[in-house]
Length: 213
Image 1 (cartoon, rainbow, N blue to C red):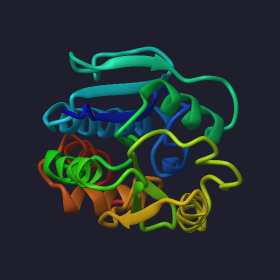
Image 2 (cartoon, helix red, strand yellow):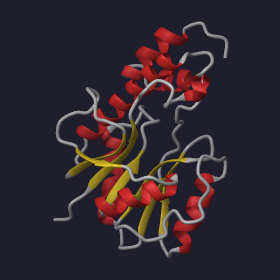
Image 3 (tube, helix red, strand yellow):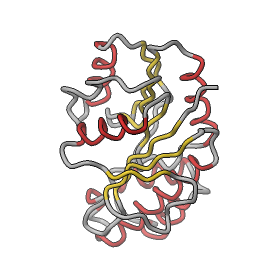
């Protein structure tokens, strides 16, 4: 039977290093609280999905937000593309990579993506577009060298360029549902409204209730 994994790319939620675009209206400590809640929600969904392995590629140190049962590998130094490539080389495939910015992700959404990978051909690839033009998920049957080469990160065109890059490698790209990731306070409020029972929503409501966005 094919072994699957979910790879989560994580930055330790330290004030001043995470979610800085939430400031203002939040301060760095409050922004880190949002980041930690989003991370905890994300890892909880991964813990409850059917992946055989759960891997965290971590920039920083583990904290109380990390559930049991996760493999932790350090991120390498370098550009984001280089760090993602290194994490994939270690994790292998078939697998699904996500970040810590979409706490509304659910176990069923992850399981559906993993099922598409396992049931697809050897050149199957998945891409989950984000509303801001980036992407929140990338699925591969196996690691393909050069997957991130030439893809600009954190731009309004990242998702489209990533899809083009996958196709240039001869991969058949299937799109996953569009999700909104948390970059700004408006994003945080929208995600909290879409997933009201999450830790993230509780923290956002406590910090941004009545805020003028």
